[in-house]
Structures are given as structure tokens and as C-alpha cells.
Image (tube, rainbow, N blue to C red; front, side):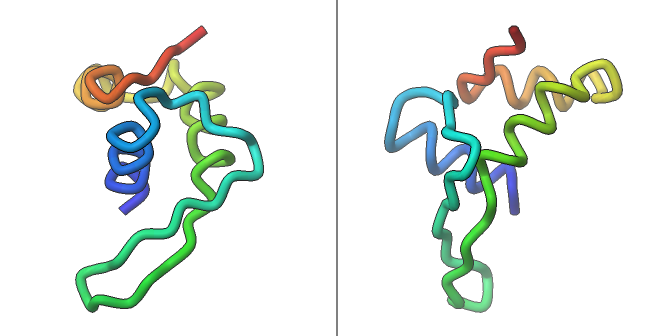
Length: 68
């Protein structure tokens, strides 16, 4: 679900330079709106890039993730 939130943010904003405290509102499969701490999640992915699979890095890069 965090990837979907990142993709939603990217499609709306055109980048993934998410402020650290940003909460992204998304509607889940059960139609319930949820708030995900997207800023923290993006920051964690960047700081842990060395532990991500190449497939995951490619997936995130495709939606605008900048690793440096």
C-alpha cells in the first residue's frame, strides 16, 4: 500500500520529494480512507537503498525516486 501512496503522490505532484512529515491519504481496498506517513516511508527507502532488491529500486525509480 505504501508503493501505491507513493505512486499517487508522484502522479499528483510530479516528483517524490516528499516532506518528511507528509501524510498521504489513500482509499484502501475496503474503501476506507487511510493516512500513510509517506514522507517517513520515502526517507526510509532512500536511507536503506542498499538493502532493496534491484527490482524494487527499479520500480521506485520509475515513479520518480531520486536516490541521492
